[in-house]
Image (cartoon, rainbow, N blue to C red; front, side):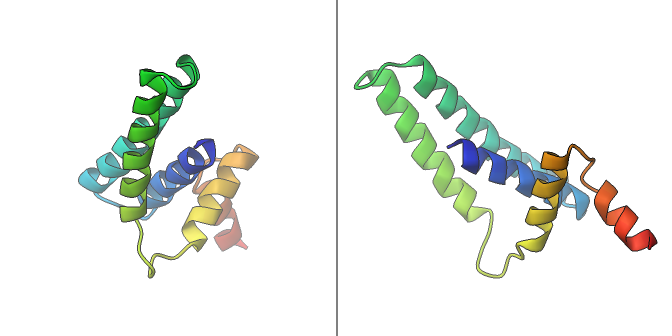
Length: 102
């Protein structure tokens, strides 16, 4: 689930950089928030508990919504750049600006 949260964060950063509207950014943010909430609930709950079951349900629903954020024509390059920038500790647009200045 942590990997999917990271992908959704990269999606948010790429969408923001490309000028996505407020509604689209909020939609992505909700998915990320729901995934994080499911992860937190899973970590607090013991195995085979109502809390664990609820965490799985939340995670599955949020994962389906994450899939709805993209389609077969969504380019992966902006996501990869956003993820790489996050890992390197740079602002998302920073690497792109440097590359275009060359």
